[in-house]
Image (tube, rainbow, N blue to C red; front, side):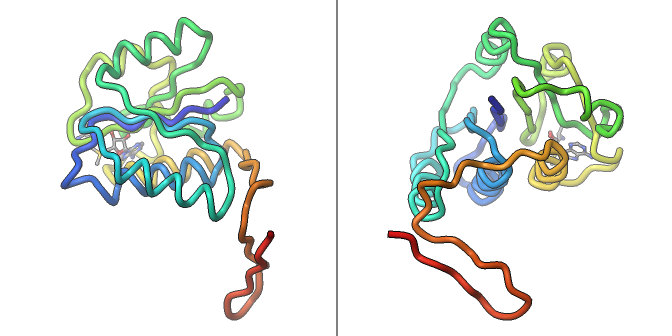
Length: 168
Ligand code: SAM
């Protein structure tokens, strides 16, 4: 089970970026997307809509206590992977990670406690960029795929134009 954890969502400033984190999580096989900060029904609705059209079962949850929630995952045997530009290169650890992971991406300010709770503090290069980029690159390297058996629409990959099929 793969959980993606987005810290400190701000409803007005982070609307698109948190939605994009959730879309990346879903597309690359996360089972659960948890966010903290401001609760945001429109974020949750937009992911439900994508699931209903494109398939997938990723659940979106909110927590007002991210530290407690991460500790509880740890007690349940999950490894906590915190993506941070200060960490060690992700390539050094990605192959030893199993299928019970919480992947944490930060917001505007990441509390020091997160670095302590994390089993791994991993970087995608050691320059500042974006939570969406960091999550995408890291999850692509986990090589998981979502179960899209409930999709209503699917893309037929093609060199030109847009080919889709509708599934009824
Ligand atoms: N200034 C914040 C802090 O206190 O660390 C980080 C802001 S950054 C825009 C938001 C998030 O993007 C980070 O918490 C991290 O999860 C992710 N991120 C940005 N650059 C990264 C990198 N080079 N490697 C891994 N993650 C990165």
